[in-house]
Amino acid sequence: MINQKEFTKLRKKVQDYDTEREKLIKKSREVLKLSKQIIYAVHRDELTAALSLIKKIEKEKKNLEGITKHSRALLFEGSYKVAMQEYVEALLYYGFIKNGKLIKKEKLGVRVNHYILGICDLPGELVRKAVFLAGKGRVQEVIKIKELVDGLYGELLKFDFRENEIRRKFDSIKYDLRKLEDLVLDLKLKKR
Image 1 (cartoon, rainbow, N blue to C red):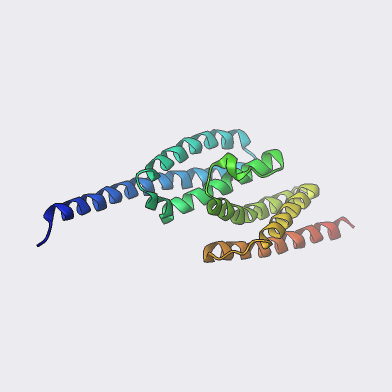
Image 2: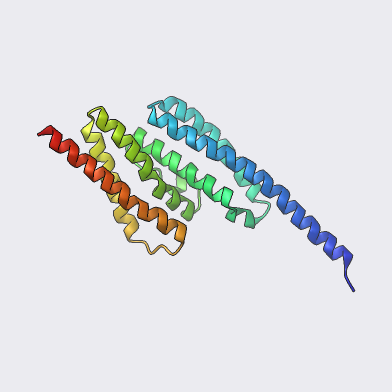
């Protein structure tokens, strides 16, 4: 009546998935940790150190993607999604501070939703950078950051986000933009 061989196969599949999922979670933590270190290095203007960390994170990302090849379902695990969006945020932040522009999705080799989530997180780091720059009197750089966030907000407004997480993160850009607009206004008023 019960096919024990079938249940043995099913049990093995579940165990194999769990094993790969545990590897994915561990590797995701590595990518997440390196992402935060890159952002921290960029905030401290240690771009050489950030570049060294980027080389490490690229290697870890490749290992992480290798794990996802075992099962398509792993692509939808929360730890993987968070690691990828933080990876995107870190590299976008580094790219903007270093070169004044955002790195394209294709160059990062990530899924569209991970790229958009990373973009939505980026303004928070840019606000921190703008406040730091304002304290140093570097008004033009603050204005450039405000213009980038304003442009991002304008472009993302054209989307019809259905996923709650993306919509919530997108909504936070509006508040970051308001902070930057207030900061720029304060800097201009102080200049008078």
